[in-house]
Length: 311
Image (cartoon, rainbow, N blue to C red; front, side, top):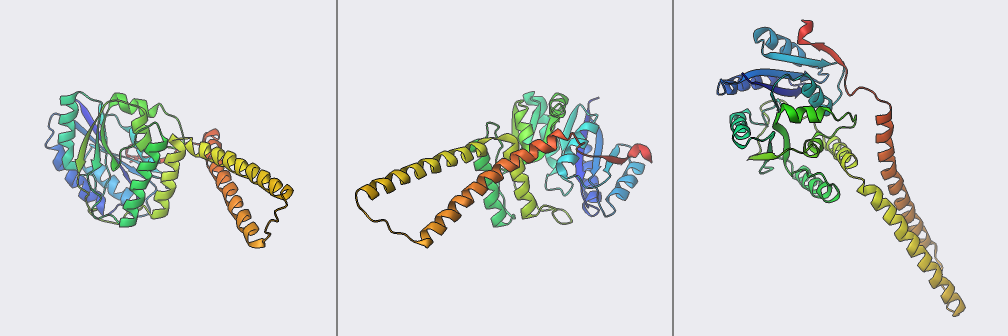
């Protein structure tokens, strides 16, 4: 019998976790031909999330868990889940039920019917999401797909069903700075897509602030494109050319006897503008340099403090 591992990263989800467990157990009953494994990853939660995982394991041996020594972030949670998963197929889900578990039977059927290694989901709409967040999210997807060779589908969720071959391919990538949405596309494999309407959280509050989403998007850009470096170089060449042209014009005007207008305002504005461009280019370079620095330290992506085997 084939095994399907359900990987669920959790951070302070004591309210949503029991609801999710009851829901996924009912979905599992619709797939009697599969041996289920429910793998929860506790990402350094400060509430009773870990205690609930322990209780669920005692009640249901299909439940496994991995608990971090501190909060390492969702990307670390995804990686830990994939590393610990023993299934022939692996699915990633959010515990808040914004990734509808009810789609899982359809995803399994589609994988077997189409004989693909990857069935992914995307939101058809962003209804219920803050307008500003939706605007910047769409802007991010348009921008990164323009500058990157790896396609990242607008509205794509981490919720997806993968074969063991695809999971092993993902685990073969040893990078520390991980952006899973890009990694899923980079490893290849034919993908079937399922769309669904946006779903509100079942309980609790989102852990993603606007700032954290912005930083996450920068991680994605630097991980899958070097275009910002090329843009910085282009701006350098452009302003060198403009400066050279301005020098020629000033010299020509001088020999023609044309007096130039001098003013501190135009000079200050020019200095601020060029200084801003220089700082922007240095910042872009710094982003790539910092990622390289983090990679060279070879620190582990996460540290496990406890698993269900320690009970």
